[in-house]
Length: 376
Image (cartoon, rainbow, N blue to C red; front, side, top):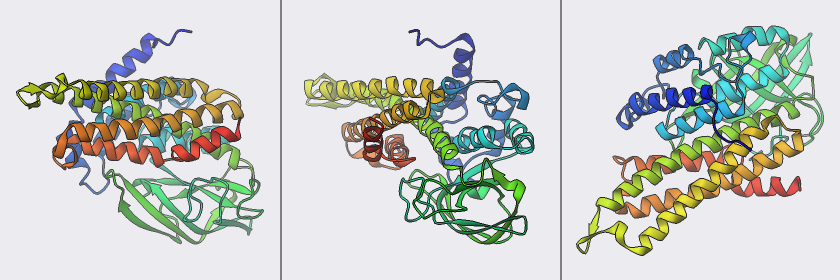
């Protein structure tokens, strides 16, 4: 099997990589992380101009017609640069949900706007009690007057404060943990009755807790079949998890390169510490962990279009390895940098924090191992 990128994929990798190196320097990242949105809308417009926002969308909606591998190329470069723009939630998870389950009117409204950079999306599926269980949904959407009334809470909704539309999972039937009865709704971010509590996450991203106080929605807000949204949500979360795996590969690559360069110059007892065998063993462990995660991330990207059980099992394996490898690489990088490793002025600690957030996102390594076993 040929794992080499095509010419178009190499061009995409070069374009995004150059952006990460030249535009998203560490100092620029620090400045952007302190802004209200946590990212630069001028960068977002540039991503639209370069075609990245529509890289995984069909050409009929202004996209490039790419798939999982193109998403992986972009994600790895984003991981290298700690790029904070809400690409995962808008172009991968949110747009993917609309593409897979949206009506013709919803696709025509949302997807070209996403590709052109005119619309930002967020996805609200987690709840305070649900942890990583997508089917644990207490938020309700009751049929009323030809539409729906949305009530309940959602937690850790990334980039909700800058989104134009929020895709919300709510229960239209069944019990709180039933797989059936979950529906998806496209909700305006400024809907009457929607309140938001914004905060910063450990890795300086933006997230919000949402409360819906009887938010009225028209029937046209429903995405996919009523009560049948869980399969769509699981597919979208798998796409996001695959993107997270590739982003973690990019972050681990930087930590490996940075640590290798440091141990070659840091001297102890008159020698570079990289000359000591015990340090070399640690570096080998870091490289092995990275390459294992890279291989599984590529398999995950390829398997996104596989049947649901095969896709879920593959994504679970890749995500579990990504979390395990990210923890090992991050911890070793910090320790080998000594006391500087956790200072705010050095990028090493910030990459480690991002890796830990990527591990938890969509289910941590322990959860993914259980998921993998369930599909055995």
